[in-house]
Image (cartoon, rainbow, N blue to C red; front, side, top):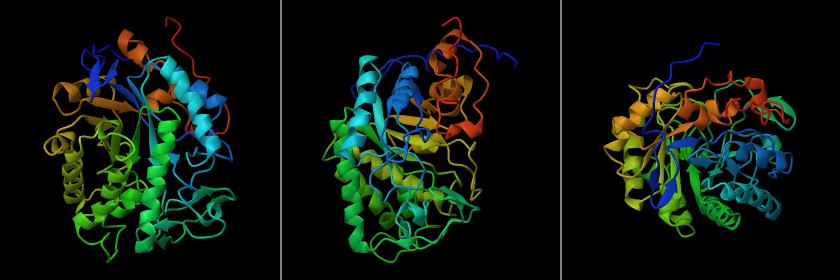
Length: 369
């Protein structure tokens, strides 16, 4: 493997004040679904080791964590809706707190990106009864074709919002420093935002204002539990993951970001890179476009290198950069950035969600570290 030339990163590696929360650097560990929590979705000792190995990040955002049984749709991913799950997370938050690393929990509802086998044979829910156009999904009974979801009834929406609020309460009790609302990557909140997946005719559908309403209600519910300065939101304006992308995406996400700016959130986390696919509904949205309508801390994500991260911060487009895949195989990613050390080879995709320590906690730290 060739050794990349070392590029100093004085901004990326500098401290940052995140609405009163001091970060030792601007390198964020992105949320990464690793599927090591087992059938009961309980965080465990292996996960304690995994997160603490990466404690030199300025901020760690947990893997996506389901807020209820209805929210499930990924085999062996963790939850935050039972006492045992909450206690499991508390072990991880305590370990990271001892290392001085801020840790936010990402709150997740998969919506239509699920399967009836996760729900006792009942269909998954979504904004509208529109199936993912894809080949198959991993389920408790093996790979299965995607199914048509059930549209949530208007009267049911409030209960889902309440699930988010209760999960946020559990996150606080478990010792997290804040929460991130996962409104990206084709999951339930994104399904409400996007006109491709939201064909509703009630107050949650039609206009961009109505499609944003579900996210608005979730933000307002969670900020009764946490101060807004401890709540982040993640958006993916450009991605086609889970069969997303509508022609009016720019209007949708510009409006959403502008509305979110009024809360004084911890940050807006924008998956602006195209490494996970692009819906090609127009020119990709850029961080500069979000900076024009969102005045708070802005986080970029997807495909960044040390050099391009430094450039984004230097240009004023971002305050923080989240790294995903590089953190999989480099637990000491920050130290490698600081010292100009080469990175480990990328993790094999087969290990991303394998239920073992292999490909999870066995990547080597740099020998000079």
